[in-house]
Length: 212
Image (cartoon, rainbow, N blue to C red; front, side):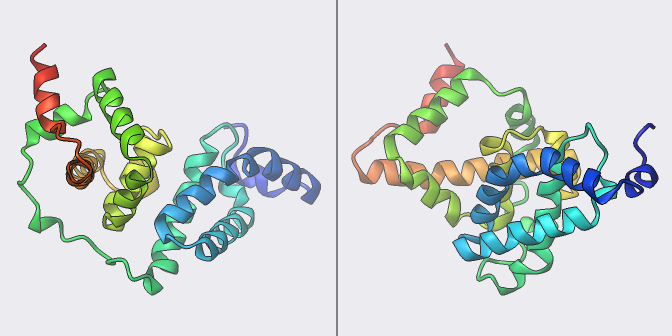
């Protein structure tokens, strides 16, 4: 490997600063959005981003040039959130997955994990256009572990493999958690849609499209 941690650590401060600026700073907007979705507080989000970059600079020798800088930074931020910010958050520190285990069967999870279908994307977009900020409100109301997988996959576009690395969980757990998170979010949005007079049922729409 041409750029090993040992070689990176021997860079001059000027070269380290140049590479840090070029490779890691372009991610700052996405990083802040992720931090805000986790903390739901602007000041905490700013603090979390600052802490993430301080740690990234300190351990920059462990970043391999040419790899996914965004995923590396997101993992640092996620770990910082769990270790520091989550302790003072009112959000539940842990989701008890045993309470909802088996609610969705394996076939449903695998189907949800297949390459995203255009019809599903269009349905999600139509709901987003319909209720606007309610999507953000519903997303923010999810337990943080569910909220995180929605953010990483549906908002930031990470692959399952990248999400598994960021979250330190198996890909199978990523698929299962994402499936449940999407269903919880859909349930919340359906209730809101009905409350404003939108009588359609998202699940019924899905079934109808699946039979076309």
